[in-house]
Image (tube, rainbow, N blue to C red):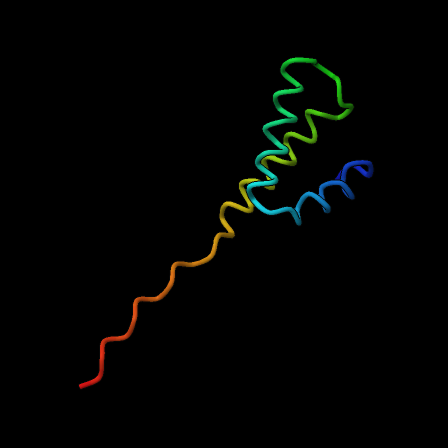
Length: 72
């Protein structure tokens, strides 16, 4: 069951682009290492952000199809 406090935040974060989501995760992780428990639920946020990062990584666009050979 999703945490009712974090579910709306995860919904918002799920719409962020990959580079912004990665930077936000890196900053939150760094803050959590330097000052433990600065942000309430930081560990849960990091787990959710890591999940979103992996999900966005798999959603990358498919490679372009090779051009068709010229007709003779």
